[in-house]
Amino acid sequence: MKRLKATITYDGYGFAGYQVQPNARTVQLELERVLTKMHKGSTVRVVASGRTDAGVHATGQVIHFDTDLQFPIDRWQRALNVQLPGDIRVLSVEEVSTDFHARYGTSGKVYRYKWGLGDVESPFKRHYVVYMPGTKPDIQRMREAAQTFLGTHDFTSFCSARTEVVDRVRTITRLDLLETEQDELHMVIEGDGFLYNMVRIIAGNLWEVGIGRREPGDIAQMLAAMDRKKAGKTAPAHGLYLESVFYNE
Amino acid sequence: MKRLKATITYDGYGFAGYQVQPNARTVQLELERVLTKMHKGSTVRVVASGRTDAGVHATGQVIHFDTDLQFPIDRWQRALNVQLPGDIRVLSVEEVSTDFHARYGTSGKVYRYKWGLGDVESPFKRHYVVYMPGTKPDIQRMREAAQTFLGTHDFTSFCSARTEVVDRVRTITRLDLLETEQDELHMVIEGDGFLYNMVRIIAGNLWEVGIGRREPGDIAQMLAAMDRKKAGKTAPAHGLYLESVFYNE
Image 1 (cartoon, helix red, strand yellow):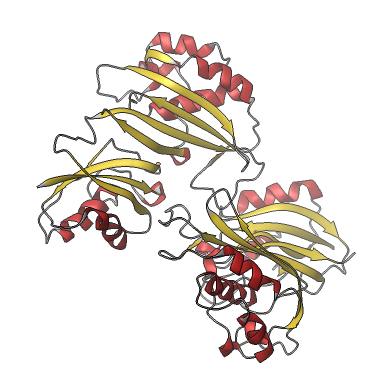
Image 2: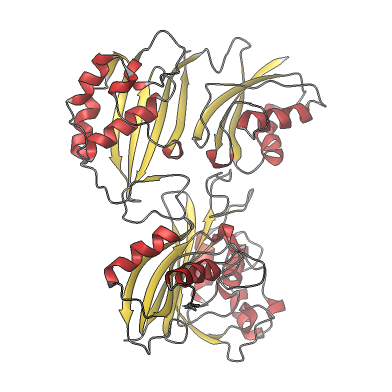
Protein backbone atom coordinates (compact mmCIF):
# COMPACT_ATOMS: atom_id res chain seq x y z
CA MET A 1 0.00 0.00 0.00
CA LYS A 2 1.38 3.41 -0.90
CA ARG A 3 0.12 6.98 -0.47
CA LEU A 4 -0.17 9.36 -3.43
CA LYS A 5 -0.46 13.15 -3.27
CA ALA A 6 -2.10 14.91 -6.22
CA THR A 7 -2.52 18.56 -7.10
CA ILE A 8 -5.78 19.22 -8.92
CA THR A 9 -7.69 22.10 -10.53
CA TYR A 10 -11.45 22.34 -10.95
CA ASP A 11 -14.08 24.66 -12.31
CA GLY A 12 -16.48 24.98 -9.36
CA TYR A 13 -19.44 26.04 -11.50
CA GLY A 14 -20.84 22.57 -12.08
CA PHE A 15 -20.31 21.29 -8.54
CA ALA A 16 -22.24 21.50 -5.28
CA GLY A 17 -18.84 22.05 -3.65
CA TYR A 18 -15.89 19.78 -2.98
CA GLN A 19 -17.22 17.46 -0.32
CA VAL A 20 -19.49 14.44 -0.90
CA GLN A 21 -23.11 15.07 0.08
CA PRO A 22 -26.34 13.24 -0.77
CA ASN A 23 -27.80 13.64 -4.26
CA ALA A 24 -25.28 16.21 -5.42
CA ARG A 25 -22.45 16.29 -7.92
CA THR A 26 -19.27 17.10 -5.98
CA VAL A 27 -15.56 17.05 -6.79
CA GLN A 28 -14.84 14.37 -4.19
CA LEU A 29 -17.61 12.18 -5.63
CA GLU A 30 -16.08 12.32 -9.12
CA LEU A 31 -12.56 11.64 -7.84
CA GLU A 32 -13.67 8.68 -5.73
CA ARG A 33 -15.80 7.29 -8.54
CA VAL A 34 -12.84 7.19 -10.93
CA LEU A 35 -10.41 5.83 -8.32
CA THR A 36 -12.84 3.17 -7.16
CA LYS A 37 -13.33 2.07 -10.76
CA MET A 38 -9.54 1.87 -11.26
CA HIS A 39 -9.40 -0.32 -8.13
CA LYS A 40 -11.96 -2.80 -9.54
CA GLY A 41 -14.73 -1.58 -7.29
CA SER A 42 -12.97 -1.49 -3.93
CA THR A 43 -13.74 1.91 -2.42
CA VAL A 44 -10.97 4.51 -2.45
CA ARG A 45 -11.35 7.47 -0.09
CA VAL A 46 -9.87 10.82 -1.07
CA VAL A 47 -8.71 13.34 1.54
CA ALA A 48 -8.40 17.00 0.46
CA SER A 49 -6.61 19.92 2.12
CA GLY A 50 -10.07 21.29 2.87
CA ARG A 51 -13.51 21.55 1.38
CA THR A 52 -14.51 24.33 -1.01
CA ASP A 53 -18.08 25.62 -1.25
CA ALA A 54 -20.45 25.34 -4.21
CA GLY A 55 -19.21 27.54 -7.04
CA VAL A 56 -15.71 27.99 -5.58
CA HIS A 57 -12.85 27.06 -7.92
CA ALA A 58 -9.41 25.55 -7.38
CA THR A 59 -6.21 25.97 -9.34
CA GLY A 60 -4.08 24.11 -6.79
CA GLN A 61 -6.16 21.94 -4.45
CA VAL A 62 -4.18 19.08 -2.88
CA ILE A 63 -5.55 15.60 -2.16
CA HIS A 64 -4.17 12.26 -1.01
CA PHE A 65 -5.32 8.67 -1.33
CA ASP A 66 -3.91 5.20 -0.74
CA THR A 67 -3.49 2.58 -3.43
CA ASP A 68 -2.09 -0.89 -3.93
CA LEU A 69 -2.11 -0.65 -7.73
CA GLN A 70 1.19 -1.55 -9.39
CA PHE A 71 1.16 1.42 -11.68
CA PRO A 72 4.23 3.56 -12.55
CA ILE A 73 3.97 6.94 -10.82
CA ASP A 74 4.43 8.87 -14.10
CA ARG A 75 1.29 7.24 -15.58
CA TRP A 76 -1.11 8.30 -12.84
CA GLN A 77 -1.76 11.86 -14.01
CA ARG A 78 -2.78 10.82 -17.51
CA ALA A 79 -4.74 7.77 -16.33
CA LEU A 80 -6.84 9.96 -14.03
CA ASN A 81 -7.35 12.74 -16.58
CA VAL A 82 -8.58 10.30 -19.22
CA GLN A 83 -11.38 9.19 -16.91
CA LEU A 84 -12.24 12.37 -15.02
CA PRO A 85 -14.81 14.84 -16.39
CA GLY A 86 -13.37 17.95 -18.11
CA ASP A 87 -14.12 20.25 -15.20
CA ILE A 88 -11.55 18.47 -12.99
CA ARG A 89 -7.93 18.07 -14.12
CA VAL A 90 -5.02 16.49 -12.29
CA LEU A 91 -1.92 18.69 -12.55
CA SER A 92 0.60 16.36 -10.87
CA VAL A 93 0.85 13.15 -8.86
CA GLU A 94 3.69 12.08 -6.57
CA GLU A 95 4.29 9.31 -4.07
CA VAL A 96 4.56 10.54 -0.48
CA SER A 97 5.28 9.01 2.90
CA THR A 98 2.31 7.19 4.44
CA ASP A 99 2.28 9.77 7.24
CA PHE A 100 1.57 12.62 4.78
CA HIS A 101 -1.95 13.95 5.36
CA ALA A 102 -3.52 16.40 2.86
CA ARG A 103 -5.74 17.96 5.51
CA TYR A 104 -3.93 17.75 8.86
CA GLY A 105 -0.47 18.35 7.44
CA THR A 106 -1.10 21.78 5.88
CA SER A 107 1.08 24.67 6.98
CA GLY A 108 -0.53 27.36 4.82
CA LYS A 109 -2.77 28.20 1.88
CA VAL A 110 -3.12 30.85 -0.78
CA TYR A 111 -6.54 31.95 -2.05
CA ARG A 112 -7.30 34.39 -4.87
CA TYR A 113 -10.52 36.42 -5.21
CA LYS A 114 -11.39 37.97 -8.60
CA TRP A 115 -13.52 41.03 -9.32
CA GLY A 116 -14.21 42.40 -12.79
CA LEU A 117 -13.68 46.14 -13.19
CA GLY A 118 -15.32 46.60 -16.59
CA ASP A 119 -18.67 48.31 -16.99
CA VAL A 120 -20.24 45.23 -18.56
CA GLU A 121 -19.96 41.70 -17.16
CA SER A 122 -18.10 39.54 -19.66
CA PRO A 123 -20.26 36.57 -20.73
CA PHE A 124 -17.10 34.44 -20.63
CA LYS A 125 -16.38 35.29 -17.00
CA ARG A 126 -19.84 35.25 -15.45
CA HIS A 127 -19.11 32.10 -13.44
CA TYR A 128 -15.46 32.99 -12.75
CA VAL A 129 -15.15 36.68 -11.87
CA VAL A 130 -17.50 38.81 -9.75
CA TYR A 131 -18.90 41.95 -11.37
CA MET A 132 -20.58 44.67 -9.33
CA PRO A 133 -22.11 46.88 -12.05
CA GLY A 134 -22.28 50.58 -11.33
CA THR A 135 -19.56 50.56 -8.66
CA LYS A 136 -15.89 51.56 -8.98
CA PRO A 137 -13.69 50.67 -6.02
CA ASP A 138 -10.93 52.91 -4.69
CA ILE A 139 -8.15 50.35 -4.67
CA GLN A 140 -5.84 52.46 -2.50
CA ARG A 141 -8.46 52.49 0.24
CA MET A 142 -8.78 48.70 -0.06
CA ARG A 143 -4.99 48.33 0.26
CA GLU A 144 -4.99 50.51 3.35
CA ALA A 145 -7.72 48.40 4.94
CA ALA A 146 -5.96 45.18 3.91
CA GLN A 147 -2.94 46.06 6.09
CA THR A 148 -5.11 45.61 9.19
CA PHE A 149 -5.62 41.91 8.45
CA LEU A 150 -1.88 41.15 8.32
CA GLY A 151 -0.45 39.33 11.31
CA THR A 152 -2.15 37.20 13.96
CA HIS A 153 -5.75 37.94 14.93
CA ASP A 154 -8.88 36.29 16.25
CA PHE A 155 -11.06 36.05 13.13
CA THR A 156 -14.40 35.35 14.85
CA SER A 157 -15.92 38.41 13.12
CA PHE A 158 -14.68 37.12 9.77
CA CYS A 159 -15.99 33.58 9.73
CA SER A 160 -19.45 32.10 9.33
CA ALA A 161 -21.49 32.23 12.53
CA ARG A 162 -21.94 28.48 11.99
CA THR A 163 -18.20 27.84 12.44
CA GLU A 164 -17.70 25.07 14.99
CA VAL A 165 -13.94 25.48 15.41
CA VAL A 166 -13.20 26.99 18.81
CA ASP A 167 -9.77 28.45 18.10
CA ARG A 168 -10.34 31.29 15.62
CA VAL A 169 -6.82 32.73 15.81
CA ARG A 170 -5.12 32.72 12.41
CA THR A 171 -2.08 34.43 10.91
CA ILE A 172 -2.24 36.26 7.57
CA THR A 173 1.17 36.63 5.95
CA ARG A 174 0.19 38.23 2.63
CA LEU A 175 -2.79 40.24 1.43
CA ASP A 176 -2.28 41.93 -1.92
CA LEU A 177 -4.69 43.73 -4.24
CA LEU A 178 -3.52 43.43 -7.83
CA GLU A 179 -4.94 45.06 -10.95
CA THR A 180 -4.57 42.73 -13.93
CA GLU A 181 -4.24 43.39 -17.64
CA GLN A 182 -7.65 41.74 -18.12
CA ASP A 183 -9.33 44.62 -16.25
CA GLU A 184 -9.76 42.57 -13.10
CA LEU A 185 -8.91 43.23 -9.46
CA HIS A 186 -7.46 40.25 -7.62
CA MET A 187 -7.13 39.83 -3.87
CA VAL A 188 -4.36 37.33 -3.08
CA ILE A 189 -4.33 36.17 0.52
CA GLU A 190 -1.92 33.80 2.23
CA GLY A 191 -2.18 32.50 5.75
CA ASP A 192 -1.54 29.52 8.01
CA GLY A 193 -5.19 28.51 7.81
CA PHE A 194 -8.64 29.89 7.05
CA LEU A 195 -11.97 29.52 8.85
CA TYR A 196 -15.27 28.76 7.13
CA ASN A 197 -16.13 31.64 4.71
CA MET A 198 -13.20 33.68 6.03
CA VAL A 199 -11.69 34.61 2.65
CA ARG A 200 -15.09 35.60 1.23
CA ILE A 201 -15.95 37.73 4.29
CA ILE A 202 -12.57 39.50 4.12
CA ALA A 203 -13.11 40.08 0.37
CA GLY A 204 -16.64 41.38 0.94
CA ASN A 205 -15.48 43.85 3.57
CA LEU A 206 -12.53 45.10 1.53
CA TRP A 207 -14.94 45.69 -1.35
CA GLU A 208 -17.25 47.68 0.95
CA VAL A 209 -14.28 49.83 1.95
CA GLY A 210 -13.39 50.23 -1.73
CA ILE A 211 -16.80 51.58 -2.68
CA GLY A 212 -16.95 53.91 0.32
CA ARG A 213 -19.54 52.04 2.34
CA ARG A 214 -17.01 51.55 5.15
CA GLU A 215 -13.81 53.27 6.27
CA PRO A 216 -10.41 51.53 6.22
CA GLY A 217 -10.26 52.10 9.98
CA ASP A 218 -13.45 50.07 10.53
CA ILE A 219 -11.61 46.78 10.00
CA ALA A 220 -9.71 47.02 13.30
CA GLN A 221 -12.98 47.55 15.18
CA MET A 222 -14.61 44.60 13.44
CA LEU A 223 -11.70 42.33 14.39
CA ALA A 224 -11.84 43.53 18.00
CA ALA A 225 -15.61 42.91 18.24
CA MET A 226 -15.22 39.14 17.70
CA ASP A 227 -18.80 39.07 16.39
CA ARG A 228 -19.77 38.07 12.84
CA LYS A 229 -22.64 40.60 12.91
CA LYS A 230 -20.16 43.49 13.20
CA ALA A 231 -18.60 42.75 9.79
CA GLY A 232 -20.16 43.25 6.36
CA LYS A 233 -21.26 40.92 3.60
CA THR A 234 -19.74 37.66 2.40
CA ALA A 235 -18.53 38.07 -1.20
CA PRO A 236 -20.06 35.68 -3.81
CA ALA A 237 -18.58 32.18 -4.11
CA HIS A 238 -17.80 32.26 -7.84
CA GLY A 239 -14.95 34.81 -7.49
CA LEU A 240 -12.93 32.55 -5.19
CA TYR A 241 -10.02 30.24 -6.11
CA LEU A 242 -7.99 27.94 -3.87
CA GLU A 243 -4.58 28.56 -5.44
CA SER A 244 -1.99 26.66 -3.40
CA VAL A 245 -1.57 24.57 -0.30
CA PHE A 246 1.69 24.30 1.63
CA TYR A 247 2.97 21.45 3.81
CA ASN A 248 5.75 21.20 6.35
CA GLU A 249 8.94 19.24 5.50
CA MET B 1 -38.83 54.63 -37.08
CA LYS B 2 -35.11 54.67 -36.44
CA ARG B 3 -32.33 52.14 -36.95
CA LEU B 4 -30.00 51.11 -34.13
CA LYS B 5 -26.64 49.41 -34.47
CA ALA B 6 -25.40 47.39 -31.50
CA THR B 7 -22.11 45.66 -30.79
CA ILE B 8 -22.57 42.48 -28.76
CA THR B 9 -20.50 39.71 -27.18
CA TYR B 10 -21.63 36.17 -26.48
CA ASP B 11 -20.37 32.92 -25.05
CA GLY B 12 -21.21 30.45 -27.81
CA TYR B 13 -21.15 27.41 -25.52
CA GLY B 14 -24.84 27.45 -24.65
CA PHE B 15 -26.11 28.25 -28.16
CA ALA B 16 -26.89 26.23 -31.27
CA GLY B 17 -25.24 29.08 -33.18
CA TYR B 18 -26.30 32.62 -33.94
CA GLN B 19 -29.16 32.14 -36.38
CA VAL B 20 -32.73 31.21 -35.49
CA GLN B 21 -33.59 27.57 -36.19
CA PRO B 22 -36.40 25.32 -35.01
CA ASN B 23 -36.32 24.00 -31.43
CA ALA B 24 -32.91 25.41 -30.61
CA ARG B 25 -31.57 28.12 -28.34
CA THR B 26 -29.82 30.65 -30.56
CA VAL B 27 -28.40 34.15 -30.03
CA GLN B 28 -30.82 35.69 -32.54
CA LEU B 29 -33.76 34.03 -30.77
CA GLU B 30 -32.78 35.56 -27.41
CA LEU B 31 -32.20 39.01 -28.92
CA GLU B 32 -35.52 39.00 -30.80
CA ARG B 33 -37.39 37.69 -27.76
CA VAL B 34 -36.16 40.58 -25.59
CA LEU B 35 -36.74 43.23 -28.29
CA THR B 36 -40.19 41.92 -29.12
CA LYS B 37 -41.10 42.06 -25.43
CA MET B 38 -39.82 45.66 -25.24
CA HIS B 39 -42.04 46.46 -28.25
CA LYS B 40 -45.16 45.10 -26.50
CA GLY B 41 -45.24 41.97 -28.60
CA SER B 42 -44.78 43.40 -32.07
CA THR B 43 -42.04 41.33 -33.70
CA VAL B 44 -38.60 42.92 -34.03
CA ARG B 45 -36.20 41.33 -36.51
CA VAL B 46 -32.48 41.49 -35.83
CA VAL B 47 -29.92 41.48 -38.65
CA ALA B 48 -26.34 40.42 -37.79
CA SER B 49 -23.10 40.90 -39.73
CA GLY B 50 -23.21 37.16 -40.32
CA ARG B 51 -24.11 33.96 -38.55
CA THR B 52 -21.73 32.09 -36.26
CA ASP B 53 -21.85 28.31 -35.81
CA ALA B 54 -22.76 26.36 -32.68
CA GLY B 55 -20.04 26.82 -30.06
CA VAL B 56 -18.43 29.82 -31.83
CA HIS B 57 -18.04 32.93 -29.65
CA ALA B 58 -18.20 36.65 -30.36
CA THR B 59 -16.47 39.56 -28.69
CA GLY B 60 -17.57 42.10 -31.30
CA GLN B 61 -20.56 40.88 -33.33
CA VAL B 62 -22.57 43.72 -34.90
CA ILE B 63 -26.36 43.73 -35.30
CA HIS B 64 -29.01 46.21 -36.39
CA PHE B 65 -32.74 46.51 -35.77
CA ASP B 66 -35.46 49.10 -36.28
CA THR B 67 -37.52 50.60 -33.49
CA ASP B 68 -40.16 53.23 -32.92
CA LEU B 69 -39.63 53.31 -29.15
CA GLN B 70 -39.12 56.80 -27.70
CA PHE B 71 -36.19 55.74 -25.59
CA PRO B 72 -33.02 57.81 -25.06
CA ILE B 73 -30.13 56.22 -26.94
CA ASP B 74 -27.92 56.10 -23.84
CA ARG B 75 -30.46 53.88 -22.03
CA TRP B 76 -30.59 51.14 -24.64
CA GLN B 77 -27.47 49.23 -23.62
CA ARG B 78 -28.53 48.86 -20.00
CA ALA B 79 -32.17 48.14 -20.85
CA LEU B 80 -31.13 45.27 -23.10
CA ASN B 81 -28.54 43.85 -20.68
CA VAL B 82 -31.05 43.79 -17.83
CA GLN B 83 -33.32 41.50 -19.86
CA LEU B 84 -30.84 39.41 -21.85
CA PRO B 85 -29.41 36.16 -20.42
CA GLY B 86 -25.88 36.43 -18.98
CA ASP B 87 -24.24 34.69 -21.94
CA ILE B 88 -25.11 37.63 -24.24
CA ARG B 89 -24.03 41.19 -23.37
CA VAL B 90 -24.55 44.39 -25.33
CA LEU B 91 -21.34 46.43 -25.43
CA SER B 92 -22.69 49.55 -27.16
CA VAL B 93 -25.71 50.89 -29.01
CA GLU B 94 -25.81 53.81 -31.44
CA GLU B 95 -28.33 55.29 -33.84
CA VAL B 96 -27.38 54.89 -37.49
CA SER B 97 -28.79 55.97 -40.82
CA THR B 98 -31.68 53.83 -42.04
CA ASP B 99 -29.53 52.68 -44.96
CA PHE B 100 -26.99 51.10 -42.61
CA HIS B 101 -27.12 47.31 -42.99
CA ALA B 102 -25.24 45.07 -40.51
CA ARG B 103 -24.87 42.29 -43.06
CA TYR B 104 -24.63 43.87 -46.52
CA GLY B 105 -22.65 46.92 -45.40
CA THR B 106 -19.61 45.10 -44.00
CA SER B 107 -16.20 45.98 -45.41
CA GLY B 108 -14.16 43.58 -43.28
CA LYS B 109 -13.99 41.35 -40.23
CA VAL B 110 -11.46 40.15 -37.69
CA TYR B 111 -11.62 36.65 -36.23
CA ARG B 112 -9.44 35.15 -33.50
CA TYR B 113 -8.73 31.44 -33.03
CA LYS B 114 -7.35 30.21 -29.69
CA TRP B 115 -5.27 27.11 -28.96
CA GLY B 116 -3.98 26.13 -25.52
CA LEU B 117 -0.29 25.23 -25.37
CA GLY B 118 -0.21 23.73 -21.87
CA ASP B 119 0.14 19.98 -21.30
CA VAL B 120 -3.16 19.79 -19.45
CA GLU B 121 -6.43 21.30 -20.68
CA SER B 122 -7.53 23.98 -18.22
CA PRO B 123 -11.00 23.15 -16.82
CA PHE B 124 -11.80 26.87 -17.07
CA LYS B 125 -11.02 27.01 -20.79
CA ARG B 126 -12.48 23.75 -22.05
CA HIS B 127 -15.28 25.52 -23.95
CA TYR B 128 -13.13 28.52 -24.96
CA VAL B 129 -9.69 27.36 -26.05
CA VAL B 130 -8.76 24.30 -28.12
CA TYR B 131 -6.25 21.90 -26.56
CA MET B 132 -4.51 19.22 -28.60
CA PRO B 133 -2.85 17.09 -25.89
CA GLY B 134 0.45 15.52 -26.80
CA THR B 135 1.26 17.90 -29.66
CA LYS B 136 3.56 20.92 -29.68
CA PRO B 137 3.33 23.14 -32.75
CA ASP B 138 6.33 24.77 -34.42
CA ILE B 139 4.98 28.32 -34.51
CA GLN B 140 7.62 29.56 -36.95
CA ARG B 141 6.45 26.98 -39.50
CA MET B 142 2.85 28.13 -38.95
CA ARG B 143 3.91 31.75 -39.53
CA GLU B 144 5.68 30.78 -42.75
CA ALA B 145 2.57 28.97 -43.99
CA ALA B 146 0.35 31.87 -42.94
CA GLN B 147 2.10 34.22 -45.38
CA THR B 148 0.64 32.24 -48.28
CA PHE B 149 -2.90 33.20 -47.33
CA LEU B 150 -2.20 36.94 -47.42
CA GLY B 151 -3.58 38.81 -50.41
CA THR B 152 -6.38 37.92 -52.81
CA HIS B 153 -7.13 34.26 -53.53
CA ASP B 154 -9.94 31.92 -54.52
CA PHE B 155 -10.71 30.15 -51.23
CA THR B 156 -12.75 27.25 -52.65
CA SER B 157 -10.36 24.77 -50.97
CA PHE B 158 -10.83 26.58 -47.67
CA CYS B 159 -14.59 26.70 -47.33
CA SER B 160 -17.22 24.08 -46.57
CA ALA B 161 -18.13 21.98 -49.62
CA ARG B 162 -21.73 23.01 -48.85
CA THR B 163 -20.93 26.70 -49.54
CA GLU B 164 -23.52 28.09 -51.94
CA VAL B 165 -21.75 31.37 -52.67
CA VAL B 166 -20.35 31.33 -56.21
CA ASP B 167 -17.64 33.97 -55.82
CA ARG B 168 -15.05 32.49 -53.50
CA VAL B 169 -12.44 35.20 -54.03
CA ARG B 170 -11.53 36.94 -50.77
CA THR B 171 -8.69 39.19 -49.60
CA ILE B 172 -6.80 38.50 -46.37
CA THR B 173 -5.04 41.61 -45.04
CA ARG B 174 -3.66 40.26 -41.75
CA LEU B 175 -2.84 36.79 -40.44
CA ASP B 176 -0.81 36.79 -37.23
CA LEU B 177 0.13 34.00 -34.84
CA LEU B 178 0.58 35.38 -31.33
CA GLU B 179 1.79 33.61 -28.21
CA THR B 180 0.03 34.98 -25.15
CA GLU B 181 1.04 35.21 -21.51
CA GLN B 182 -1.72 32.71 -20.69
CA ASP B 183 0.17 29.99 -22.57
CA GLU B 184 -2.14 30.20 -25.56
CA LEU B 185 -1.51 30.55 -29.28
CA HIS B 186 -3.87 32.93 -31.07
CA MET B 187 -4.43 33.20 -34.80
CA VAL B 188 -5.75 36.67 -35.67
CA ILE B 189 -7.10 36.96 -39.20
CA GLU B 190 -8.52 40.00 -40.95
CA GLY B 191 -10.11 40.08 -44.36
CA ASP B 192 -12.79 41.68 -46.48
CA GLY B 193 -15.07 38.69 -45.95
CA PHE B 194 -15.04 35.03 -45.02
CA LEU B 195 -16.75 32.00 -46.53
CA TYR B 196 -18.54 29.29 -44.53
CA ASN B 197 -16.03 27.54 -42.20
CA MET B 198 -13.15 29.44 -43.86
CA VAL B 199 -11.46 30.63 -40.66
CA ARG B 200 -11.69 27.20 -39.04
CA ILE B 201 -10.30 25.44 -42.13
CA ILE B 202 -7.39 27.91 -42.33
CA ALA B 203 -6.76 27.37 -38.59
CA GLY B 204 -6.92 23.60 -38.95
CA ASN B 205 -4.41 23.60 -41.80
CA LEU B 206 -2.00 25.96 -40.07
CA TRP B 207 -2.11 23.64 -37.04
CA GLU B 208 -1.32 20.64 -39.27
CA VAL B 209 1.69 22.53 -40.62
CA GLY B 210 2.68 23.38 -37.04
CA ILE B 211 2.73 19.75 -35.89
CA GLY B 212 4.59 18.58 -39.00
CA ARG B 213 1.73 16.80 -40.72
CA ARG B 214 1.99 19.19 -43.68
CA GLU B 215 4.69 21.44 -45.13
CA PRO B 216 4.36 25.24 -45.24
CA GLY B 217 4.65 24.98 -49.03
CA ASP B 218 1.55 22.78 -49.21
CA ILE B 219 -0.77 25.75 -48.65
CA ALA B 220 -0.11 27.24 -52.10
CA GLN B 221 -1.00 23.92 -53.76
CA MET B 222 -4.18 23.64 -51.74
CA LEU B 223 -5.26 27.13 -52.77
CA ALA B 224 -4.49 26.37 -56.42
CA ALA B 225 -6.50 23.12 -56.33
CA MET B 226 -9.82 24.90 -55.63
CA ASP B 227 -11.12 21.70 -54.05
CA ARG B 228 -12.10 21.35 -50.38
CA LYS B 229 -10.86 17.76 -50.36
CA LYS B 230 -7.27 18.93 -51.00
CA ALA B 231 -7.10 20.82 -47.70
CA GLY B 232 -6.95 19.36 -44.19
CA LYS B 233 -9.28 19.36 -41.24
CA THR B 234 -11.62 22.06 -39.97
CA ALA B 235 -10.50 23.20 -36.50
CA PRO B 236 -13.08 22.81 -33.67
CA ALA B 237 -15.74 25.52 -33.28
CA HIS B 238 -15.09 26.39 -29.62
CA GLY B 239 -11.70 28.04 -30.32
CA LEU B 240 -13.22 30.65 -32.67
CA TYR B 241 -14.18 34.26 -31.83
CA LEU B 242 -15.73 36.90 -34.09
CA GLU B 243 -13.76 39.89 -32.82
CA SER B 244 -14.71 42.91 -34.95
CA VAL B 245 -16.73 43.92 -37.95
CA PHE B 246 -15.91 46.94 -40.11
CA TYR B 247 -18.23 49.09 -42.21
CA ASN B 248 -17.58 51.65 -44.89
CA GLU B 249 -17.88 55.35 -44.01
